[in-house]
Length: 314
Image 1: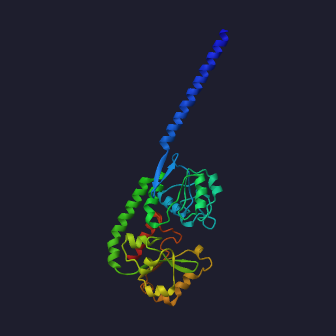
Image 2: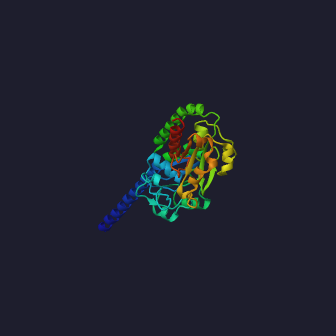
Image 3: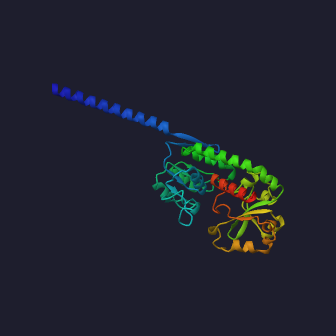
């Protein structure tokens, strides 16, 4: 009888210890979860993360550019023509490719088990829904005016907020320093950013692509053709002649002109183009920044600001 009582007491004691241990483990887990969970407010919406983000997938070129400038390492990135875009290749070595910018591969991304995904506001609702089932996905804005919100949100998610703030501060200081010199030299002159795609010329609204650097940050006059543009707008050679810009930043990417590979050379050799003030004054600047650059990112703005200052103030 005594043996049975002793055995029963041991069983009760063991069960009690096990219960306490499990409870403590649960409490520790809850504390750790609370300590590492966080919320990021981005463009008026809250995004909740259960834990510190250590494994991130960049499912947008905008996100890739800003991650590169912040020194963020990624588990997966987008591809262009089957590889990491050349201008970002040094920043993303030995990473998994997760599809193209229009439809990232959800299956590949799932296999990377990301803590967060940086998507794009250009992705369809269907694609965003798929990505959000895998991990919290930020719809990274492609609008240039949101570049600070983009960078700060990415910095907060990846514990790089100090770096993001410094980059913004450095950019604003440099653009402000150049603003008066450029405004004084090019007062009332027409300066255009033109992008050649599928063999045709396009311009953009003042707050899209590279334009905010010229018209917002440096305070240059906004040409009427830019004011009238509601989105990407085709520009004919005849209309360009009427505008007769004083300087042109011309962007041409081979992969965007595969059906018209000679379009750039043909444009530059066009008699009407040759008669422009910009051409006659040697102020046509071709691919001063990487032609695949998204325009509305910190990476693009820093590079383009340098290009504008170097070319317009030389």
